[in-house]
Image 1 (tube, rainbow, N blue to C red):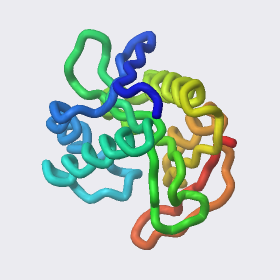
Image 2 (image 1 turned 90 degrees about the vertical axis):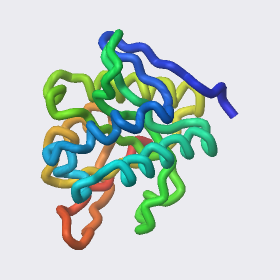
Image 3 (image 1 turned 120 degrees about the vertical axis):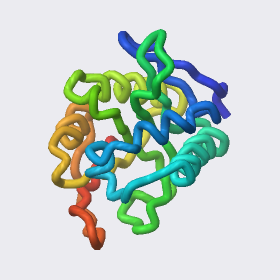
Length: 175
């Protein structure tokens, strides 16, 4: 198992593993309807975000990798989460029991290249520690910004998934 508690420093951010002190930051991050728009999530609250925090910590504990909590240098606010986590989506199609890339950024930071910065650093760390391997990703087909970012990060479309009650999911992979 790789060394735990990695900290990544990018040009503008510090990224580290989720910690129990991040719960309020997760709640604040996910409070925005615009942020949840392409996640298929109804409004969330403290309980749901506590579960998200535990899933993130569990990925780190069981697999040695997971989402990083993103903060601007010298600031305490959680501005996003990004990285590679272990998932099991339950609909197969290459998204069960695999490393999966994902990113969520607070709305006020959209369009500044911060998600790209965090994901490039996360993927570089993942490849160095775990070796280059297939990483899956799923994005709502209407989320043009995330689809563009996935392309820039080297993800290629391999399929779609129709999930009742939400937009079609585009399935991507970086091999």
